[in-house]
Length: 167
Image 1 (tube, one colour):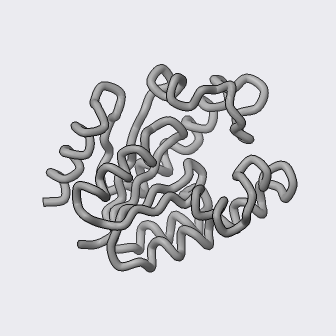
Image 2: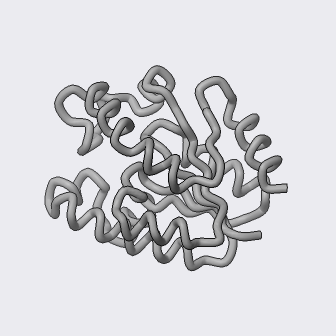
Image 3: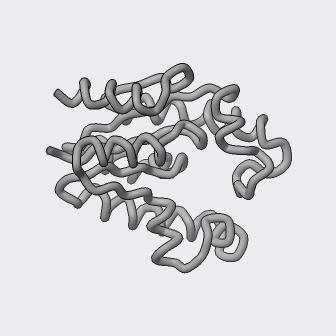
């Protein structure tokens, strides 16, 4: 089975759904943000603060390339991973199945917990999240093979929907 790539905004459930999907399909699961933290020895927030967004995006690109080169599994991308033109080209050229988990601010807010440490959501986190999604939505839609709205479904139902799409 080819790689399944989950993309979407913070709070869409990429990690939760990705892990459940991988278990359901008996595949490996990789979360690019977790891999970056593991290899760098720093949290995503620390990288942003100490090294800058450019350094983080370079690490993210390395993890994206590594993930897309794996033969089978579920890959959860950070919200900004598909934003660069290089990343979009890699994703479009990949034989993987790309799924955009679409989420509204009302659903994402309690999941993200805007009081937590999110480097791109400083200041007014809800307004920042909305602005990020407005900028990124067209990219997610263009790169994705499938779009699933996750606002009203439990993770298990979304996993079942994805499994159905893959058949």
